[in-house]
Length: 135
Image: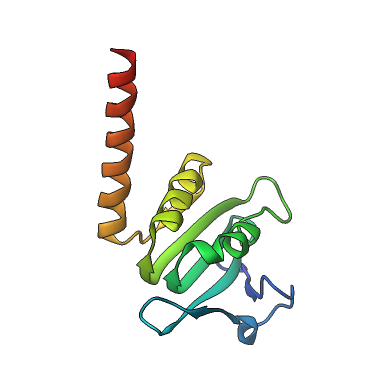
């Protein structure tokens, strides 16, 4: 981090700053019976970038919370990034959301390779379907 740059963590639910403010969002038990959980951490690094880091299972039930975390608060010049380094699972709805995030010029960092392949496959299938409709 550059000299003089401050780094704060902000709980996206309460708006309180501090390192202990990252709270998990819990879901009901899934198909396997185990409850799903996604932790969302909102980091602001100086004036350059706002990073939202996800931890756990990213499923459709968390889209509203993640979308809320990705809203630009503050300077319109600030870049946004979504970090998926600690994501252990992505479902189809979340994958479609990630496609829309990338199209809005929000940087997606540490995208798991299986999700990157999935997105590439889906986008190539969509373009093939459009070509078939035009032909």
